[in-house]
Image 1: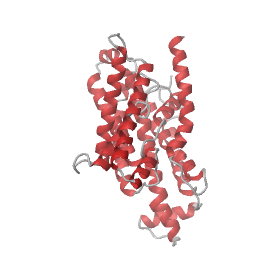
Image 2: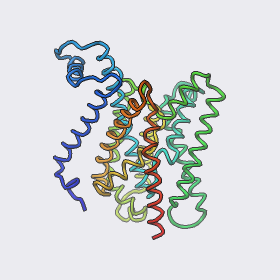
Image 3: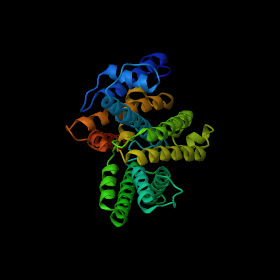
Image 4: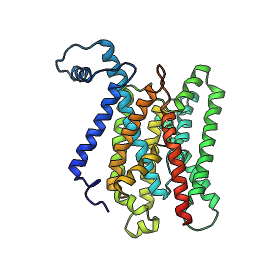
Length: 351
């Protein structure tokens, strides 16, 4: 068992290596693109924006770095952190290795809520896109949980993985259909085109005001989840076991599911629905650092941020002259991983 080290390294060394990896990913996001920009130019732009004297930089390079690549990379990092941690929370609370905001329909519900605010004016101007997405995510989770429990009938025990998976598929399809109905009924051609591209996961519109929302929400959510590390450890053994350890399970589930829904909703309102991050990253980190959440949570947060930054680099550069939706890249990685996890969990239950 890993107690005070990650991969055999001391915590201080692990933190240092993690920061180097994260900074390396951010640096790659700034350097790599259709217009390669050298590191010294990046350094000079950062000095200029911080108010320090620096050599003059080409205005085009300055604009690409400061107004486009840097906020886009930061949003990718915040989104990766948020979705990966949401996956950790859902997998622990539901005791289901296939739990993920995208698979369980939270992302679809958040999309519906955001589109309802943007197109229908839901909330009469008093509700932001993120607020609408949050309500949609909570409604989607409630529907999926109700449907999964209904499919179990009166049989004892926790909701099975298969029932939850099928309920998630049904819930996601329902909310996708509602979103399509809203678009078809009320959106014009330009709105419909933009929303459909956004729904596949799109970071091309990321700007600094989005950073000022995404980063604080991601940090607050990460702190809340980390403070419940012990409760998440206990919940993986079931609610009865957690209650025997003095955990207020109803309160913990309310806080953590609300946090996961908020993280998902805010990121969906900014970037659209990006799938499989909350599935792939937590499982990869369990393999590296073990199942204790005091280590798993920070490792997953780091890996989620790095994963989505790299996915965005691929989305921007895979096809010259065209930026792919980032959801396409994550699905190409996540769909095979989902199949592997599904097969392994099925074999584990039958063995």
